[in-house]
Length: 358
Image (tube, rainbow, N blue to C red; front, side, top):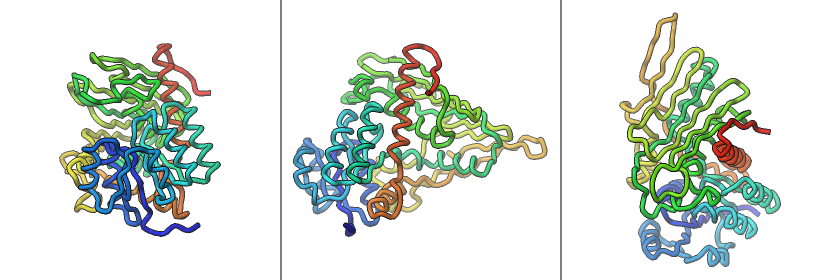
């Protein structure tokens, strides 16, 4: 059955992910309309009504499913333990589904999601928005053009300084078995990006620590991935970094790229901006990365303008997939590969040794 535009979208969960990331990106995508949100919070319901006209409010996911035929796409932006069961129920109701990362709390749940998508024929994607970060897009472009030669080492970090546990942060109050901790939260982005660039690794080594009082899961972790090509990827994620290191450092046989600071799109979304605003995704030149090359054997370092960040491409791709005009922007199989790395990293940290992928 052909779909009519605009496609009606319901967002399940209207916290930071639902309200700050998903809602404005959907609103700015031609052919999509935020038609409903699900939240038990009266405060968040009131905020959603301010954000959108002609909006339906549901107090529970079950209530939403009673009106499933009124919608085309469901966005799951709830705590990690609810991702898989809610996504499966939505697909069984005949709806396309986007799930915030991590897609599930273990690889078994993710396999169930993939099987359900195949059985129901529902379009299903995972919100790995960091694939459209400006710095990551810049690195992909450098590698595609072979600017750095053969890649030897890839270093990537998400670091923060929060010496005390954040009040109300559910990710810090649950164990890894429920999808808690910084490896699941920030590490899922770092691992996904590394797999996008270099494919399937052949071994994983990890260190996971709980540094702060009142935190149940890891808040300071490190993952090392070794790839068949010879690339070594070192990934850091921490909530207790009093001095922030580079975001990316890529070393090749013919040059290097180093970048500090974060893609500006998250801060722009937090400030109430959207991809419809002027200069969206553009970075101040003071934050550009440094490209180092050796033309004629002489070292040359220059500021390299970052490509524009493009979070808007995720929902444009999802819209097209629902209309039968292309694949979903992030396939669940790639999210499964990331979860499998996370699980192996957890095992590696416990055994304190490198583990091979079978």
